Amino acid sequence: MYKHVIWDFDGTLFDTYPVMAKIFKDLLKEREIEEPLEEIVIQMKVSASSAIKYYEKKHQVDKEFITKYQKRKKEAELKLAKPFEGIEEICKYIHATNRKNYLLTHRGESSIELLKMYGLHSYFSDFITSKQGFERKPSPDAIHYLMNKYNMVRSEAIMIGDRDLDLLSGKNAGISACYFTDGNEKNDHADYIIHSFQELYSIV
Image 1 (cartoon, rainbow, N blue to C red):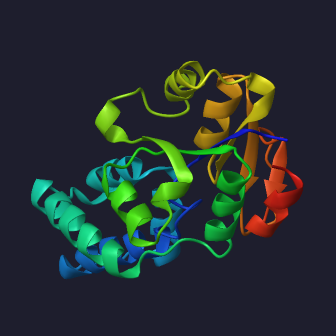
Image 2 (cartoon, rainbow, N blue to C red):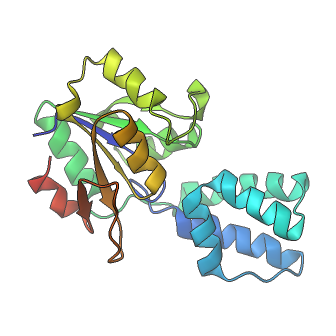
């Protein structure tokens, strides 16, 4: 049984990629640039900053574009982004059984705002966002901070995410890693692979 469950945000707790990618696509279209939505999602899944760098190089998107994107994204996410099915129940279950949930994300305080909007905030014991300034995943620095702060035993902690960098941050910290995916792909960095959060009950 894992006593400490560390969650990624985008694509793990919340289904944000479709919202993020649609806004990005619409902004590109305003500049008469066509990009497949599926390709933008792929780039977003690497990371939002990576996607921006990719399209900066490919289409020379400028600071004005990025500022517009960030503004529209924040507005849209508060209306459209939702937690994945089963997230509230599993987070509540972990919390109710005297264990701890933690957030580890590259995004800013908007993640905490969304957790509050959907009644999930109280199930979490701590929140690591871009505000704290830790080195980005797959660095284990943020996880090491949580481990030291909460006296975690490595065998009792697990990182859950939808990208290699999430899993590697866990493995680099010496803890277990769980890969969440809606596809059938394997992942060499994962100790567990799940396709729905119902499957987590047999793991955590």
